[in-house]
Length: 166
Image 1 (cartoon, rainbow, N blue to C red):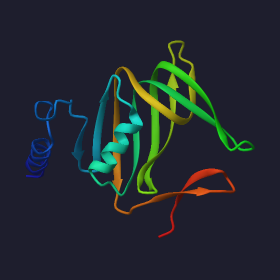
Image 2: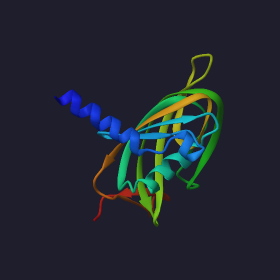
Image 3: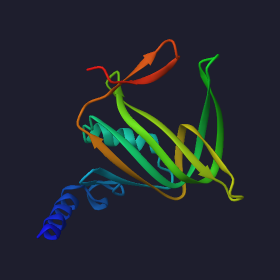
């Protein structure tokens, strides 16, 4: 009985989500019991797609994990200068993506870190400044939380920080 219910729930979710034929765009996400499963394709900007999902589905806050193939820019935060030192890695395998989705000044705010591997099996990691799907795809599981969370500028740190204040 439970299997039948889950099957019917999945069918209803798939029927209510626009398809390629309806929108001219490939379907990028589907609703699942914990939130959403997103599959991005070559050329997709990871942060833009997460922000679009947050706006379209009115997600109050979320955490996410993912993997796939990307061109990525990491940033190492220079605390003295209060800015990120960027470094870009092209066509690497995203072995771990983790982050949070909150809101800041009425817009979705993404905070993400990751680990990528290159063809020599070297790992590179850090705060993600940007990521674009390269060869293949990126799969992201978004776990939705019921409370709306805001990110606020912490002047002492010189960085946006997730606020737990109501």
